[in-house]
Length: 249
Ligand code: OOG
Ligand code: MG
Image (cartoon, rainbow, N blue to C red; front, side):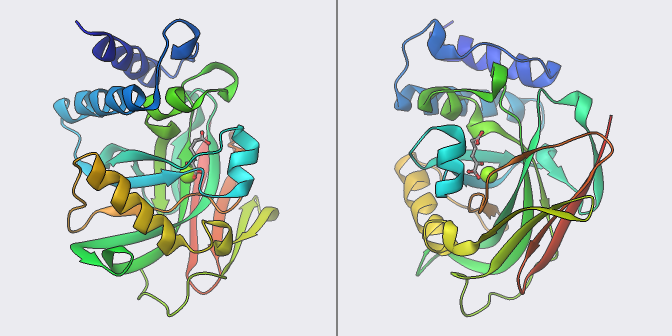
């Protein structure tokens, strides 16, 4: 077995067990391209188990996230149907290593090219559940890329028609009705549609074609916050509405 497959298995098992591992780069020298190969092998294992590809995500598209994670490069990852959490649904914190939540904007893709890389059928407020499989939620760029950019789950609010402007909508992250983070969609590369354009380009370079009905998460507008058992989390995007989840033990 090659090293790519071996490291993908390590991450896959950590995710399934909800147990942290040390960074892959602690023992193996990796570059970003190899990180993406590991990610592809990791998600291929999930697809072999019956999961379906339903979209892509971009990460570290905002200053807040880059500063929080100490990695200053846009990254992309893969979304499967098993990561979908119904709006208002409950997630079991104990199944994850150290889950966090962050407010995002989601696009529903038509599968056709568009002015921002991919044509968009609708937009929605979203919450992303991220969960690094690495101890202490700390990683280098190749590590986080290999770990499918910490993807763990996502909640989509109701799809909305695409508004004229998406570049300056207020974003709130609420926990138990209290606002814990505030931001703007402008924090996402200046405009979430720019994230879509970059994501389309990066995916194409990797030979991944964005299909009709796929979801695209543009990246968090604020820093992420830990998901505490018993809490109720809600993302609010001005003019688009809300997406929420509840956390149990
Ligand atoms: C990496 C994933 C970043 C975002 O929206 O910026 C991300 C991480 O923070 O663990 O999803
Ligand atoms: Mg995110």
